[in-house]
Length: 333
Image 1 (cartoon, rainbow, N blue to C red):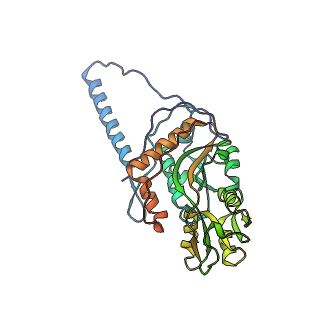
Image 2: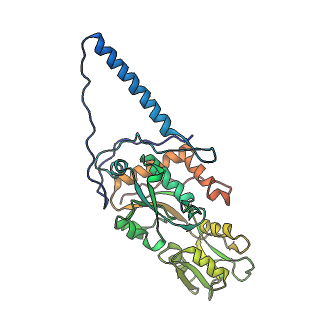
Image 3: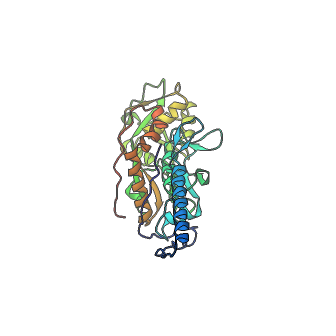
């Protein structure tokens, strides 16, 4: 059973575009004094009923069951946040929009029922659970590498969890919580290929990556003599490699593992990794309170085993060694 994570008050943050208005103030006040045994009995009875209700609420929000009978965390409906913060607005609205990828096996892949699944989706739901938002009120929208920053800036999503590498260029326009995973760029070729052994043998070769991605920028630097071919999603790169339209595909190793997992007889990885790619959760620039909340939530998931469970049920299908989660970077924006 995974215990929901409850945070205390945080400083107010700026409004996200499209947010609801300020939530109402919490009700407070001093308890009234009473006279007579009748009122005393009524108050004791009311207190008992309140206590039972609170226990029932904790029981209902603490655990639930998957369709396969396993335990799963459920949203923390009892969570409370400082009025005016993004957390309070999202909690009171009871819904959230999350950007993720729909074509990346193991991280963000739309399944046959039309729902995305993978490690990024699991990480996003750890955060939305802590916000007290029901799973059926989490709206996942497809974000590709090229539109992640615009979607955040335009308020089309409240956060992006989409194999999103944290770097200084992106931090100028959005903020990041995390990282929650560190990948490394590598090279994928056809299984029968013997010419390409890594980044140093890409000269004159057609190498496919994705527009607006960190791997595309990296390969220009480490293999300037390669012919870079760009698509909007990596699944198209895999198709091009299989059809011999390109000679190699480059991106993060775990993304390549996901492509290989879908077609193990067609591809292989060569040359190991040559970068470090820390994956973070992208949010609106300047929303320090929300970033702090997400970082706190990630650290709690590291400690209580939810992060490890999310990894083993997704990426762990092809990478049996669960890594140690990376420390979050509480940088000053």
